[in-house]
Amino acid sequence: MPSANRSWTPPPRCGDAKRLTLRLVVNSFVPYAEPRRTLFASLHRSGFGARFADTIVVLGGSSKDSVHREPLAEDSSSEPPDITVIRTTLNSFDLHGLAALYRHLQHPHVHADTYFYVQDTCTVDEDRFVHHFEAFRLRPKQLIFTAWPLPSSNLAVFDRSVVLSYK
Image (cartoon, rainbow, N blue to C red; front, side, top):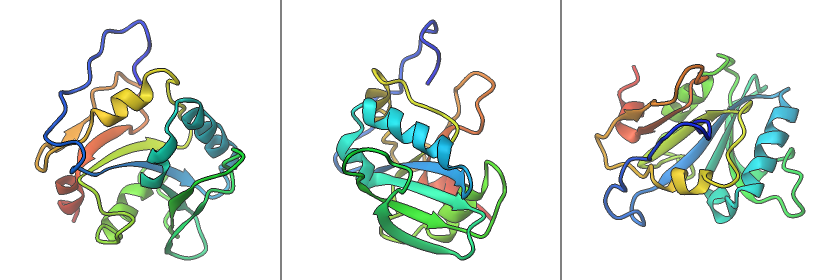
């Protein structure tokens, strides 16, 4: 999220938030367990709670391609929630998660109206993240928000039509 000393307002809620699906996508690499552990700890502190059911972690550099629901091994909470884990043999630094979304877009645990795409090396603001996250339920064809000041490390919010436009 933008730093606390900047004035920032999330976009207005778009339509019926209960009907629009929003997934947090964490792009990661198999050996990067410690950054995932740090990110998930910050998500727990932010009150992300039930939203973990709509979380996808993409693990690049895996030995095979797969999509499963499972607790993330690096989640050190007392009861790690089941999340969607996509394993891919691709390793494109910050971008293999985008390729995995395209490949598995129709999978029921991947399909969504909107994706909030982050890197495993980020953390979230414990007081404001959930509010801002919920504000990004986008109507189809609203495309993409990348309003973060540099360096943004490929953080973005985009709707399904962006994924569908990959070639």
